[in-house]
Amino acid sequence: MAASNPFIHDDFLLENKFAKELYHTYAKNQPIIDYHNHLPPQEIAEDKIFGDITKVWINGDHYKWRAMRTLGIDEKFITGDGSDKEKFMHWAKTVPYTMRNPLYHWTHLELARYFDIYDLLNESSAERIYLDTAEKLNTPAYSCQNLLRKANVEVVCTTEDPLDNLEHHQTLAKSNIDIKVSTAFRPDKAILVDAEGYNDYVDALAKVADLEINTFGDLCDALKSRIAYFDKNGCKLCDHGLDRIHFENFTDSEIEVIFKRKRSGEVISDEEASKFQGAVLLFLSETYHEYGWVQQFHLGALRNNNARMHQILGPDTGWDSIGDYPQAEKLSAFLNTLDSKDKLVKTIIYNLNPADNEVMASMIGNFNDGSVKGKVQFGSGWWFLDQKDGMTKQMNALSNMGLISCFIGMLTDSRSFLSFPRHEYFRRVLCNLFGSEIQRGELPNDVEWIGKLVQDISYNNAKEYFNF
Image (cartoon, rainbow, N blue to C red; front, side):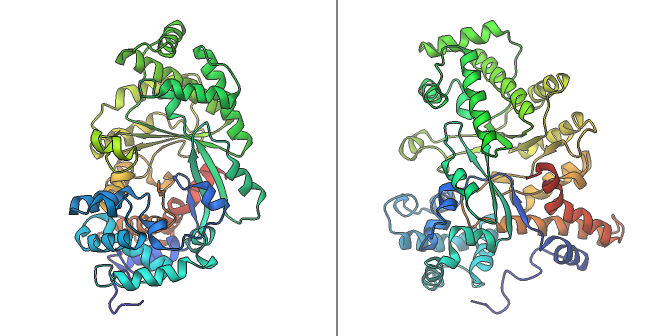
């Protein structure tokens, strides 16, 4: 549906001729390397046909859920037993109220790019948009893999727990799919010793690794066996979702005592938990170095704030926010310990608190030692910061403290197969940032050279960095 004077148009977010040239000539047609997301590999392997837009667009999207709850929508029509159509209609009702939230931009970009729908989504347009998208989503042309192709996706890297058997990645490896699908190792549950259910998790890890886990050394052996298994199945990345890096001075004997006490059901102190987490993370990072992986750290989330709703719906359902943890000192000590042993691999640090942007942007420069271009990266704005303002602030901090020319660019960090226009959104913001400074005379009118930098940030740097 092409509306007259559509909101989403060729020059959306591009404010001058330089920004337009940078985007249309250098950024627009670059393939997408989405090196971190939470897409279900089973749906890719089975080439799922979703049938309607709620299944692919609203289910699992806690960004939308938070907005709907704020507007007063009943949970029945968000995560409850309402029908798919009812949930979509309530989302459509919500959309006009999301103006100035990135959801408003993302919503209309995604409708335009996947379905050629340029009408605004609201209560009046909801019925026909639901029917039009359902007609398409019931066909093989809109299968899971074809949605990736429509977005020009070259690489998808999902995220799996060490317990995962990677059967769907194995299926994809044997298939003739023309999109590279890889995985990232996410061992948070083995690190967070003070979390509920830790011992049950260790028992499950022991079973999968086919090892008894009675000592800290046993735990390390089990984790290393899973790293070897992931590596054998093509994994070259890991990821950690932590509030901050915990890193205290410890001895091996201390860590053994802490682990045995935890395994026997005793309560351990915050200081003991911090020492233990640092010890596990140090072991993991040294092992990643052995395998030549890239390590990622997503830092700064304050999770599961609403205990009542967490009890009802579980984690990752929209009850998290930005935390204000101290970050610099322990992060520096951790990276320095690895660097001192010459065991610091390529590292990406993502920050959720914008107050720490300059801290992170300056921190990476301490450990970029000239051995690899952009070895330690300040990751793109994520979660609450993957919008125009958040991405701009992240790129400004990186530019001021380091070299944005070495930046590996955007990722979706998403659970939705319709989220890939976020790469387009990022590229438009990037091009407008450079274009505006050319217009103001703060950068030279050398569109060819700056276009190369834009092209590198959009695609080439990630291609070189990850070597998929």
